[in-house]
Amino acid sequence: MDFKEILYEVKEGVAVITLNRPERMNALTVRTHNELEEAIDGAEKDDAVRAIVLTGAGKGFCSGDDVQDIFLSPEDKIAQNKDFRLQFLQRKKHFMGGAHRLVEINKPSIAAVNGAAVGYGCDMSLMCNMRIASDKARFGEVFLRVGLLPDAAMILLPRIIGTAKAYEMILTTDIIDAQEAERIGLVNKVVPHDQLMSAALEMAHKITSKPPISVQLAIEGVRRGLNMPMPDYMEWHAQAFMYCAETEDHIEGSKAFLEKRAPVFKGK
Image (cartoon, rainbow, N blue to C red; front, side, top):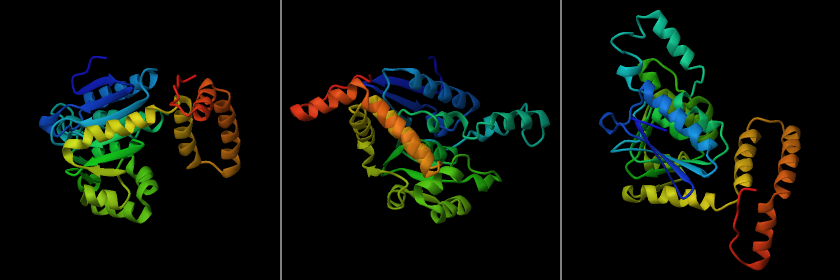
C-alpha cells in the first residue's frame, strides 16, 4: 500500500494507522478518506494483523474534514455547483466516511487520541471499539456550527455516553477536555501525553494475546446485541459459541489453563 497522507505500519500483530497531515491538524481530504479506507481494508484482510491503533501525527488527532478541499474547492464549490453536490452526497452514502469500515470489521480497534478530535475526528474516534486519550486531548461535535450533521456521532454517541450527554455535545457543539471525556465514559482512560502510544499498544497487545476467533466473534456479538431481539441474539450466540468450542485454540486454552502455562493461540 502506497500512501501519501497517512502512515501504515504493522508490528507485533498491531496495525498502526497514523493520519499524517500535521500542518493541517490532520484534517481529511478526499485522498485521506480514500487512503484511510484502503488501510482499514488492508488490515482486515491481513491475517498478521490482530488489532488496529488509529492516531494522528503532530499535535492533533484529527480536526475533521478539510473544508477547503472537500467543501470549497476552487473548481467545484459545493454551495454553487450542483454536480459537485451530487458527487459529495453520493460519497456520503457510506455516511461515516473513510473510517466507516471500523464499525463493520471484527478486528479490535483503539483510537489513541493525542490532541484535538473534533468534527469527523471525534466521529472517527467513536468508530473505534475503544479510546485512550492523552491528557492533552479534546473532543467536540462541531458540525452544527457549519450547518451540517454529525456522521457517526448521532448513532454511536448515545450508545457510548447516553442520550442526554449525546444531545448536549451535538447540539451545543461544546468542546470537552480529556478529563471530562473520561468522566462521562467517552474514553476508556486518560494517560500522560508522552505515554499515549505505549498505553494504546499495551492494550492492543493484551487483546492480541487472546484467541483471534473468539476476539472477532466477541466484537461481532456486542455489535449484534445492540440491534437484535433477545431470541435472535441467543440463536446467533449458540452457533458462535459452538464454533469457538470446536477450534484448536479452545483446546489449547483449556490445556494451558490446566497446565498453568501461557497459551499459544494460532487463530485456528
